[in-house]
Image 1 (cartoon, rainbow, N blue to C red):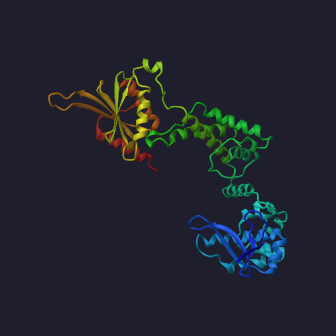
Image 2 (spheres, one colour):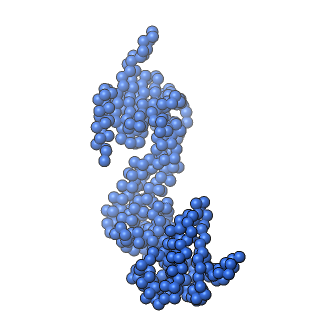
Image 3 (tube, rainbow, N blue to C red):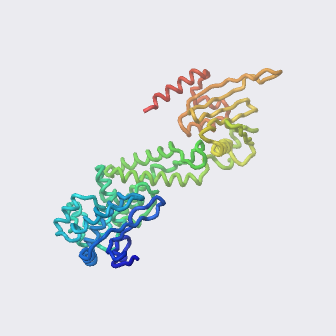
Length: 420
């Protein structure tokens, strides 16, 4: 039989219960193996109950000291009741100086005290009893989150100025740097908002017109890492030059915001023109058909009078078919007797020209030339050039190496240079 003897009725503050005639303090902390909340209890006396009823600061201090014991219990072990009961007299009944001395020796949960109004200056001095004089029953979790973030920054030597803090609040990343940044002007003090917007304007100018599209080599979900880095570098450089006093955390959050927004805009804009323009029709783009294939035998035809440009159709084909074991894609122009093959696994490409068609049982003769490729943008350039002008249009994007062994040596040499 369990009856509640005393509760403050606010959040997770421990309550006093009577269970089988015995007074016990009950608190929820941690989770079990199924991620359900765990509840712990340990015995208390009548004198302890009297202090818990009348003294909110000491009640909160006891909670702060017991929480690490709950953490130590993990997902299935029992609470160390001897260690918990050993905290009762020194926290609830001892003079303030002794309470402070105890907290210098034990582990305790700082966040709980900060959330319930602890004076941060006194807390840093180790005067925990005095720090809780203005304790509140209702917690302010945001205050605790911000304090944890400040301590993490202090540990790595980062100090925020008013504008730095305002930028982090503007993006919603003051407490949690891993959250997706967004624009929250109401979170910034009105006096600082013009300075915040000046920094944002600098960042916007730096990445105007840039895009972060999908990387079709990784399917239909993964962003182009090189494009992301390009935007990040442009914004970082511009903001540092225009606002040299900003802290790294502030610059990082502005950069993250710009990259995220650029990626969102790009998601709604085709990588290539979705419809053919007049310019595309008047270009040297293949006038008949192209054959798109992968390394698994899939094939797709592109027709000149279709709704999409050849590069668009090709990269859609790649995004739909590309996997870790399917990284070779080819575009063939049968009319020209030419093709280009992209090797995503090796950061390379080959252009293939038919020198003599096979006749009378004789095998056709091809010229195959290889080149190294540096990232998705370079692949896009090759595809765009080939679909407009065939193998001849690829000349500027070499060097093209006709000897496979020589090319393999060049590829290995580049890999060795890139190794850390």
